[in-house]
Amino acid sequence: MSHPWRPLALCATGSKSVSPRGNHQRERNSMKQPDERQKRSGESLSPIDWAAELARHEPWLRTVIAARLGEPQAIDEVMQEVAVAAVEQKAPIEDRKKIAPWLYRLAVTQSLLYRRKMGRKRKLTDRYAQRFQPSEHDTRQEDPLGWLVAEERRGQVREAMEQLPKRDAEILLLKYTQHWSYKDLAEHLDISESAVEARLHRARKRLRDLLSAKNVIEVSG
Image 1 (cartoon, rainbow, N blue to C red):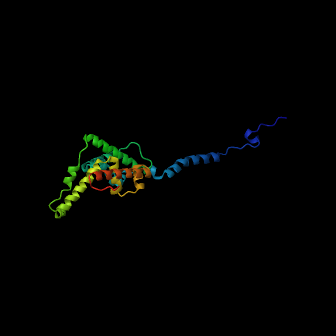
Image 2: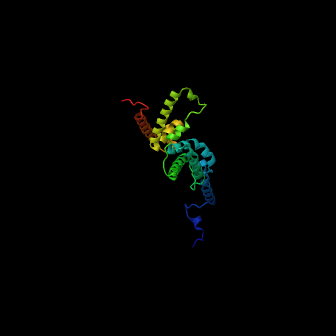
Image 3: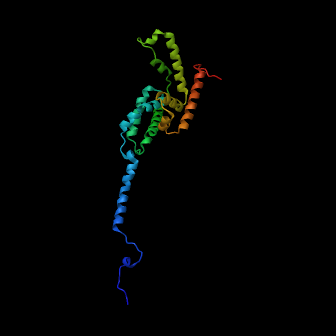
């Protein structure tokens, strides 16, 4: 005798029916995933206030530009180009920790473009000498000999800094004008702390050799 027809899902033993509630739960979980990713990325998805970031990084960026160009009057012009390029950049930066290294590379690039536009590298020794000439009200006139000796020494140090490779002058200025630690330098230049130590060691030695050749300092042994 034939059995009446029954749905397969009901007569198959051990089979599991698909619950609509389970489907809805998976849909809700999949909808939550972008939100969770957004929370994990945190502030990386929020728009970057470039005016605030440029103001925060401007002091050390100016030091980088000064080391690359050596011309005080060029710093403002290059900084303006850096600001324009930062605001108009096409690819958004998602990781805020990468802002400083990106601005560093941008400052270096804009400095190179400035030098190329000017056509040649200018010597600054005479310009610095004029800048430090005593005025009528300069108290250094009270000790002309001491002032001359100090000015000569400063001039020799400036000449030595100008003769250094730009990367050496740059890292020395960042270290001793911004008072940065190895960690600070590594984060802003996007290199390792061991690379910072190696670059500083090489830059100090080159500067010391130049100053020794000018008889500004004595190197023992």
